[in-house]
Image (cartoon, rainbow, N blue to C red; front, side, top):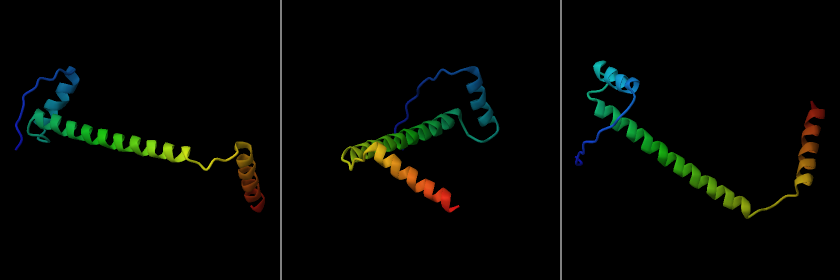
Length: 89
């Protein structure tokens, strides 16, 4: 087991009451257990965000490499395609 370190956290009364209620209900053994779970969830969320951002950067770089399309020509092509679909029913 890793070394434990005691820290003090200040929070609004409503949050503290929710922590105590979760412990009193038996859902958690201690308020520390709740905070550790919350921090694990937060860390996982940060990792997902970082991975998503990295993927977005990859896609931007991929897009910068091309191919590039002429905007008005591409819109005309799309418009013709969907107008044909509308005519088909």
